[in-house]
Image 1 (cartoon, rainbow, N blue to C red):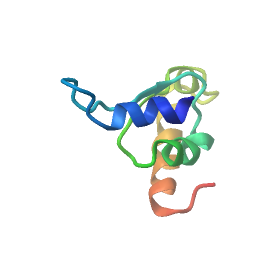
Image 2 (tube, one colour):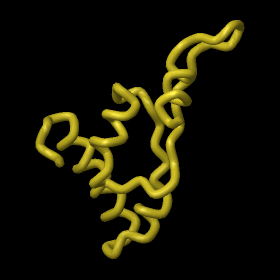
Image 3 (cartoon, one colour):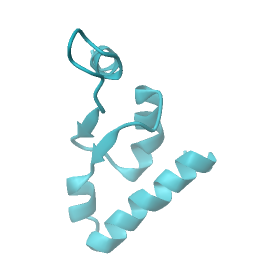
Image 4 (tube, rainbow, N blue to C red):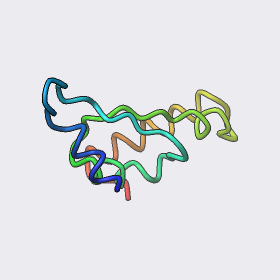
Length: 79
């Protein structure tokens, strides 16, 4: 079901142009590779609210964890 929804966002549909998927709900730095692979590209918007807000090191550390994880995904270093 998720893949069908993502595919629908990726292509034009009648008079509606393609859209960027917006993903939220339980996303963590460790899951970024799976998210990117499910979407099929880096063309998505991720709302990472709780994982950043509730990070034990605070907001800055939570944001940094996502940033570092994404760099690893782009470079192939993050699981």
